[in-house]
Image (cartoon, rainbow, N blue to C red; front, side, top):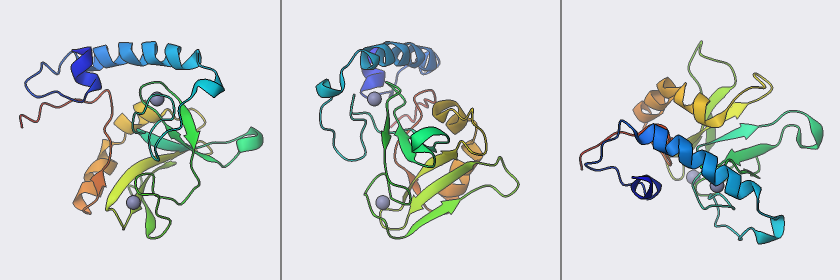
Length: 169
Ligand SMILES: [Zn+2]
Ligand SMILES: [Zn+2]
């Protein structure tokens, strides 16, 4: 089951235990990533985790220290975070036609960053609004924003490892 989940295959599988298997894999991958030296990291492709190659679940604008206001993409598998300039599509790297969407009256610091060019989006969380934002959990906690983005015709580029649906196709 772990192999199937890591490969993103859920067709016909029992998806009920998937979040628990995935949570265990996160712990294992995070421990492996934490043991790597910087010199051991492969040079990753744009938009993928430089440590394990997984697409980011969301991005986070940090507060404090030397990297105050910097935006990082967040790996949902090994917990690695890597820098990406702000106002730039995390899928196609375009800096044009980037827009921000949020639920009117919804939680502050939770937005979707959309790209007109590739018609996709990923969520972006702002620690200045809540320093305890957590990319995987707060992504799950803001599914209404996914519904809004779907209604506006944008496609989500990568899923949440704790949310599995058997689509049956
Ligand atoms: Zn990773
Ligand atoms: Zn794009």
